[in-house]
Length: 544
Ligand code: SF4
Ligand code: SF3
Image 1 (cartoon, rainbow, N blue to C red):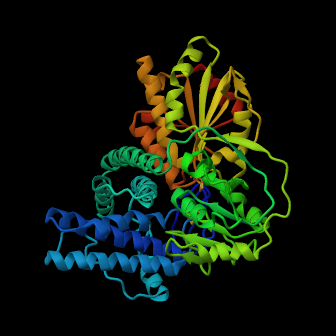
Image 2 (spheres, helix red, strand yellow):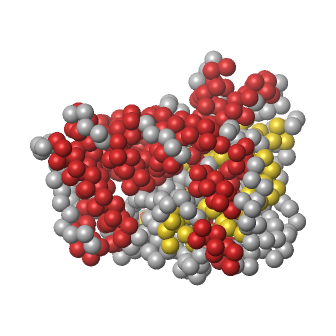
Image 3 (cartoon, protein in one colour):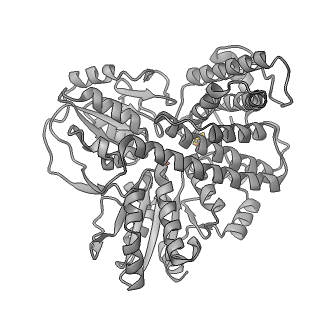
């Protein structure tokens, strides 16, 4: 096993990365190796898609499958070796169909990789050869760049899959994912090309995030500022976590009139701002905090839980494995998986459970500052910057996580001067979104843009402000403080860099796969900075 894709990976002075029998996240060596094998098979399939397309063959099914399967390899998504094996087998079937239609071989090193069986035991033996540092002779900088590309591509694939789950298919964008994966599967070793390609993945992700925003707003309308109650209401209850708004909508439809209340968890908090979702009166509120708190919170939740995407962690620790359900690419061994759009088993389980026995006094937070609302406010933001009632804006967002250094983000937002605003997105906001920020002349000082999936809205606000002022985004009174944990945050970072955004503060620690040399390059070319202490960072940001 070798996995170094997330912030909580093992770090030592000799060799970082999770490399023993289990990763810090709980992923076993077996599942980790199988995921590497899956990625390798998907890279081979990508080669066939490229040739199939050149010969005008139908490749849509395979193009749809690749982002879905890649998503299963992100941090805290799928821990179930059986499911990973089934994805690898599906990938080889798609490949064999294309190969049969083409009737000739193709020129790709992974074109004919054959699985040595169809069960976990056999394949995990084979899989151990596909770990990303398996050869051991690629130099560390090059390996780091390959991983920057791969992890960025995983993040882009995940965002693409979110759009796909909402009914979108883009031949152009899914084919770009395929081309990047095929290229990475050929083990490129030219560092300059790898760095350029990482930026190309960032640009691809910008288009993907635009597609995702279109998918969300076409389906549910543009988010509007909405107060969300974070306290329970008496009655039976189901909790929905992850990022998938479509699953939430299906569950809301199927629970209508049953007397069961639905609560959002984690990254589904922004769902309350969408007009077509907030119309469901039994979408009662938000429960709990960011993903790393789930074991304690899910244990106490008096109903079933649906996990629609990242982040799931070990449910056996809180002994709620019998009432958590997974969807789509999510998996945990032994946890029940909903394969079609019928949520009745979860609804039936909710009916048998006690639910909340009393209604607690409401506590609200405001969400729903989507792109349309933000752009609608851009003129007043500019006039507030002009008359100095607003000094600076801080975008503090990304992922939350377990590490102690993450207190930085709550301390940082609390020390933001009163004439400045904080824009936020992603699950990092749970560090501070229950604090009273007040307002500046009616403008809320905490502006919740949404999920990490909604980074497009934040980028478009910055672009819009810069256009109106005739300057670059880097000249705006805006600082970006990115809190990263997993691969979606990596690709958002690549997107910002590829758009020319400079001087981003990142933490709580730099990715372990970035070597000192690579960090030097990123600092030199893009001004990336590691967070240090709140006071000095704040000073630097305010004078920049
Ligand atoms: Fe380790 Fe993170 Fe990989 Fe899990 S996802 S094995 S914690 S690097
Ligand atoms: Fe969070 Fe997992 Fe990244 Fe969507 S839910 S931001 S960590």
